[in-house]
Image 1 (tube, rainbow, N blue to C red):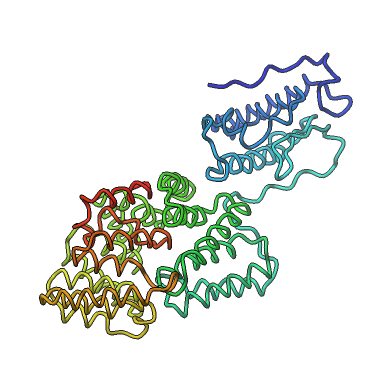
Image 2: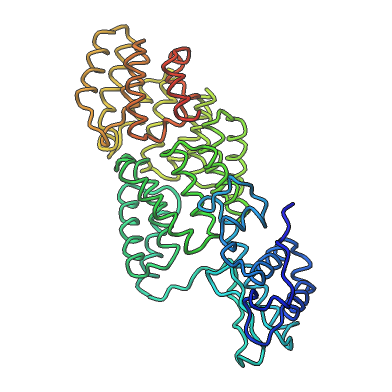
Length: 466
């Protein structure tokens, strides 16, 4: 285990960065008194953090007190540590400041030497107690959100969050996005406003009303800003993980972020849903994903969790269970168009063609899925033995395709059903270029079962990290 750098003696005064008249020995005595406090006896990691910071400062090596160095030397994260992904140093720095401040409010109230950390700095400051008559203010609770200074921003946040309590409509998600953006403009330092932008931006491609290339970079920027403002905001780590999975196809990073989010807030059920759908299912661990979602539903019976479970059941080839979950989703959220779409897929697999068509007969479906009518008719022609008619519709879908507006996966599905492997894989690659979210289930989606032995299919899966 890495140890703190050896300290210099008090005689090396020119090397010790302390106010005049405070020997290094007195600073170390002040540090030992803090370390003997109950809060530090219970947290060896914070004790190690404090010791490392004080000794490096006394050694004149404040430059070593950087996030990357601390992650490796104090937190044993190893040379691959990336503070942009793992905010452990920032989180524990806030806790350390809080514990030191609390110590001087209580047990250390009469200590002659004070050690303190300024917000945003990992370098401790040392002063004599008599140099400042004002005691440090008790630190804000670690999990408390930053105060909203403007009532207008608060009102916009409340209204926006009402639009996204469970699964939003197209109208609702855009309304929420606009409100979150206005709240961020009004109060740019509030993490929840940026978190809201990230969450709303994740929904727009799912609802078929915005290109992933427009929405997901915006979601990433917003989540990163939220984490800068509040490193312990677990939902922001969830949004960043979802972008990593669906846009960057970095499933390892997504899993790391989701595990961190779970540690930050073990009660956040959305973390378990996100890990089931953004990591476990893409990796083919469908049974584990289903268990996570069943547990989420027992905790919070939300439509979004039921929808996710229905999709996992579809990937498991349990068409009846998938259809049941989608129907339950629609009972709670009748305007949630993705549930209608996947109900239609499940009914097709069950041989219930009329029910499949009925599921698609709803306002907004054609706008969200412009190629849907041709896809349904092409597969119907194919079931009835009219291959040439199905092929003609596939070519119509190709001609109508516009990047960002149409889903290439529907074209790939029709070509796969036709046995046209080359064309199907070409459109799967187009979906990869478009960053279509549902492509992350490439290795489990039954639509592509006929392509799995094709080397070009395996190349695409490897390219995606699957």
